[in-house]
Amino acid sequence: MIYILLTCNLLMIMTFLWRFSTLPPQIPLFYSKIVGEEQLGDTWMIFILLILANVFYFLNNYIVKRFFSQNEFVKTILKFLNIFILVGFSLIFIKIIFLIS
Image (cartoon, rainbow, N blue to C red; front, side):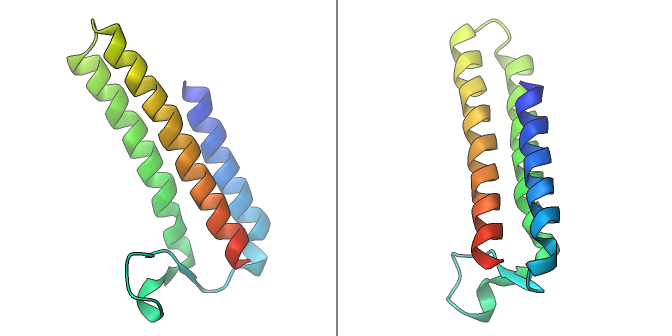
């Protein structure tokens, strides 16, 4: 499972480095805000997605080990939730990078 985390992290970092030269100084990150200046964030803020994916992964693993170590059903559900979170955040990250560069 840790291999999926490392692969997604590496994929996001490689995509960022590959397209870094074509990125604008500000990128649209806050889509829940009104269209315009309020949606923009600095380029480095894209790594919030990477950090959140890692936090959710480790939080889910902590919850499984702490509270559900004997329950195989919950362990399986949280395992698939981790995969979904990692792949989802990676795709969102890559889509934002490719849309703006």
